[in-house]
Length: 251
Image 1: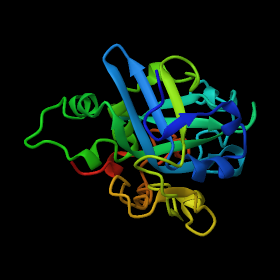
Image 2: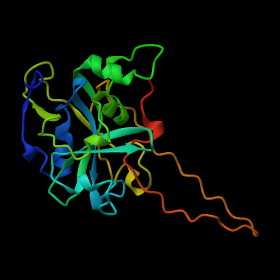
Image 3: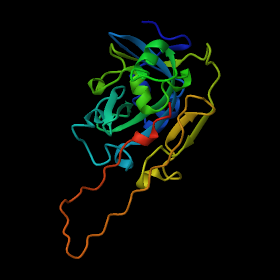
Image 4: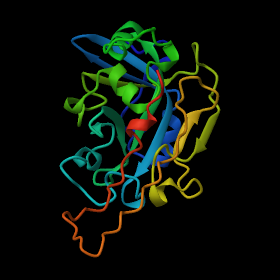
């Protein structure tokens, strides 16, 4: 299948670099997925970088698990996970093997398969149609528009179902985008520090970019009374990519 208008092929070397080199350069690139239902492609307008052992906001901060194993593999693969039992999220693996770095695709503009993306997004029934700008606005909506699920975890971006393209500098999006940076959405604890972790990147002024929301403050633990004993020992709360329930764009 030919590249979308204004885009051209690239190779795995694009992703086999440090995540902070890759993340801003993802903006304006095209991500395409094809399945039996058809093809949807979007122009990426917002991403967040996650840097493994350097990043307490990353799934891979504490090491490899069955869930995050794809992050430790070759660059140019899809890390897809199910967030909070509500929706999927699509990440693109960067760096070298064993270095669990990658970028969460937070938003994009659908450039191919608009009607298929709309059917997927409106499958639950709506009172009014979604505007085009909202079809892939927010990470759960990106995954839904593309039709991505846990079955896509580990897929190769240079395989058959997925394709990735870079802009040619011609066509409707020829102008070099203005890139803005800031704190990641919904990330709590030290990794939510806007000065230390300004690792969200977006195309300034683009209407498909999602809204920033800080993490919700955690409530202090309820003290036990003198005659009470705890019935459960809780593990420390795991930090997650910022795809929590309150963060999806209103539709």
